[in-house]
Image 1 (tube, rainbow, N blue to C red):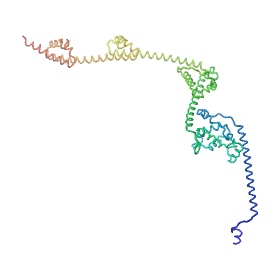
Image 2 (image 1 turned 135 degrees about the horizontal axis):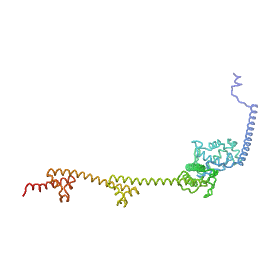
Image 3 (image 1 turned 90 degrees about the vertical axis):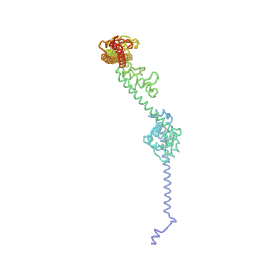
Image 4 (image 1 turned 180 degrees about the vertical axis):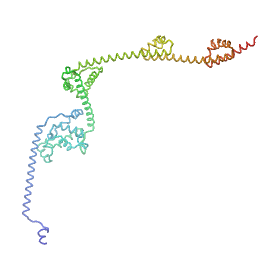
Length: 450
């Protein structure tokens, strides 16, 4: 136990061990050498990256066409792309191209999803599109600092993106929030309006090109002369001295072209349209042919309308004549005599020439018919009461006396006879009262002679 404690388990402290001291010195030498090697490598890597960055700056490619440039220009954002921020040489394309993507895809287009973009996430998006040079994609903070010390134009790609995002924040295009950046609401609304206008303009341009293609396809080969839509787009408009392609780049200058094309298409579809400008298209002869067809159709249409109008006039005249035959004993006289209520025209003439006058003539005839019907009804009623009167008189008087009474003209009958005067119940009773007086005055005297 004592031996084990002495050798192994008892507390102990070396006062001196040459082997350990030599080992410590060796470790310190190795660490110093490693640090020196790492520093040398960092310096070499930094110099290599700095040289690569200088070459990248010298070989920076020219700007490429930007699909969103019309929208960016429309809302004044084109002046905020193409900035040569520190580190812009780390990208494979011109600053205007990758900055347009940051603006359009990352900030406005939500290319990173619902999360707010940061400089790191925006840089990853650019890496995924192959827009960051491989030699600068990812590096340590020490290497970044070493390269920056050698060339103050350098910055890591993510820092270049951060510089640009902070610039956009400073000019009011973007907002710097706690967890990332966002497009300014005012810019977002302007962008949306511009996108909608651009979509409309693009759709209208496509429609114009399709219309021009359709018009050219209508032409015989000898008149078309091989013209294509592209040829037309490159043709100079004589009024503006600009190619038609340039006119279609703006809604304002596109609208007159679109309106004139509608007129030409309308003519081709058989509509009599005022075509003022042929827009440089070889369609003059075709327009003449279409106009001739339209003129022929218009003439045929007018002829049909004239026949139809004449038929309508004759039918109005015929209907009035047929109606008159059912009302009048001599319809011809009434139809052909001038009438004061028809401005001196005859009913037949009025019915032929004027729709409303025909209706008025029919109303006049209808009034005559109503009067005749009323007269017939009154006569029937009068005959009924006259039959009653004759029966009542013949019951009281002899046949001769009855006839004398009924034929006697009296002041009370307005100098007419009792038979004529009797036409309704009131006049019937009036005559009966007269009968009583007549009997008392004349019949009783016959039985009591002087």
